[in-house]
Image 1: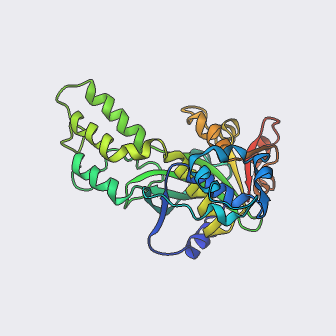
Image 2: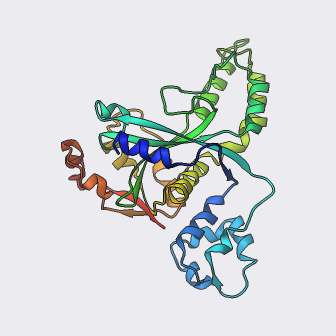
Image 3: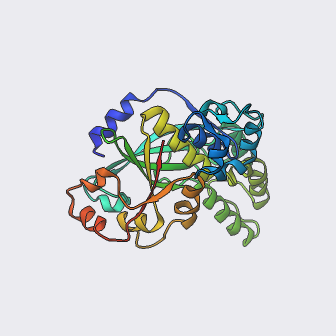
Length: 308
């Protein structure tokens, strides 16, 4: 989208803190509440493309409380466990109309960035065990679209067209966890060395991983995608969401080296019941840019789509 469009969208968003509460497999309840038709029978649900979600333990707990054969969307919105993470969502922007290929975006212009930031519970453990100098953040990659005020776990880059009621999730990424384990390996290979900007040893880093980071290791990707879907539906009002496949994303975003993890663009969208489609988002199809048109003309182009 163009920068003026992005500024207008951001200006309309709520001000202040936006918390996103997440627990393992919450996405399954979200997808069911957003995508199924009210009044669907449990038998019909078991025969639908959402049947795999019924195997999740949180869904089983909710299904056990449903009286009768029909299911309403509200049935999947009431469950809440005692233990969950309270992430803080912030907004950024990424891209350019000039030199746009360097930003790994699908068309000239800007992406909205949804940042999933750690909770204060995590931050207390981070500062206790890592204790960096001043405002230094040794696990943050500032060349990427992270928050400048918070510790960012992950982010999603999103292109959208409000008139067409469409959004394209360009990227979901996490630097923090990769950098933590990169430093962990580096320290383990060098005795009596410390992380830059800190007095942190490998023993203290292990304590941070165990006490602060471990709750996020297995849920960060589903939490980020769930937050992006929630944000697009609840805050923006978009009901048709596209997601890059691995091959399409690399081709359109000019990624010729250092490819992202394949699972983020294969297993993750399938887990959320995205379906494969051949038609691109209409705002890409209507693009008059020569590179975009040439790439869309290649037969291999495919996307994932979730319609709510």
